Length: 500
Image 1: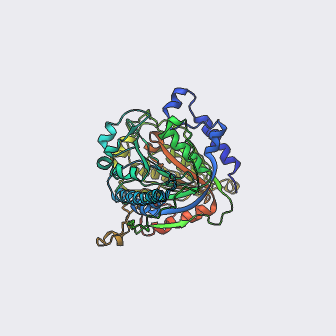
Image 2: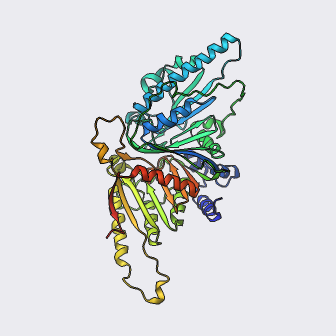
Image 3: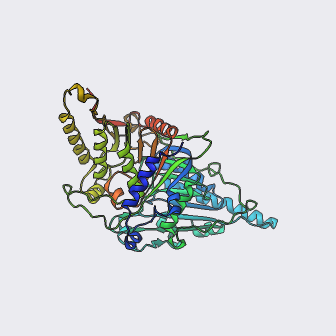
């Protein structure tokens, strides 16, 4: 299966039309991809081999999937997240690095005693944008960000003793990047040895929210590595220096679970293999969205929003929504982007069924500051417009017009809620998600988009984001089944146009 030519053509055409032309504007975007450049286009329009899809809380995903993967690295780990805070996730990451250091010191000591070539260093990069409000207000307003000195790692970041890591030949660097007023680096991803990548929705933080994570290998990892380099190591010109590889010297993979890593359990935790029997990679779009420091802020909710920046993620999502023929499934923490709401209403008018799952009262202050409105207000507005369309449709049509009439699509809106039977079980050690932080769009049961981007104004106008789009009916089916299982008894239906 390959991308339909119409999708790629529409995506590229929209992206070319929406990208800025002035060099000064381009340099203000982090990162910049030129769709007119063949090499950049190949990084975005690519293929991948999806390996697994995991649902759970942030801590359960990190301890079951991400930490075991990054501690199994032989040469390099890149860990990028948005929010970094003291939490069960950070404690588990600290403990895993300590165990990894002990394992590597044993290998180094053994090599010295035998007089053999020692284990090569492990390069670790930790990148984040937000640690606290004060940190963001005082953050250096430089494209180069801020590199934390090793002396601050333990107290400020909760990382192990630098001397311990150095003794194990773990070359760690911790860096933050944030630009006032709202330009947060929102993507979350892990790249292991430049061969495997994980794109979760969760931060290194304490919130027990429903999250998702997709694991991929294949050519799309190269695009993700370029995205990382252009954002976090721009001094390399968007290309990472090659890793020196000698398979005879590489250490065996370390299994931190066998070393006693404590798992954080979640009642919503599920992990599924994706396309295990697929003979070839599937069509994939890597969808970065650069941050923008001048978002044309709309201080009042009744003012009309300007057109969203023409980033690959924004362009691809609008192209998908505009091209939907049968169904749209949306799961997003918040929904305050007017361009998305207009696209949803247009799809309903074309007869497309739309199913929306979001969270009630999640990050209300952030919504008001960045959008001047809230998800609940926007959903009420959407319902008013939908009901107006329902009232305006004719009760009966002449026979000669019936063939051309398209009925409205079905609209369902639900709020995520904790499973009632588990919310009251205070004695259980399993985390029950209290909000949904998963970012998921599925269109026509064949296109699936995951990543960091919400359908709110902050993600569409100011934040840096990252999405990945897969074209596969099998993958969409597996993801849909897993999500349905987790959402069972965790939804509060707000509206269903098909209800009697």
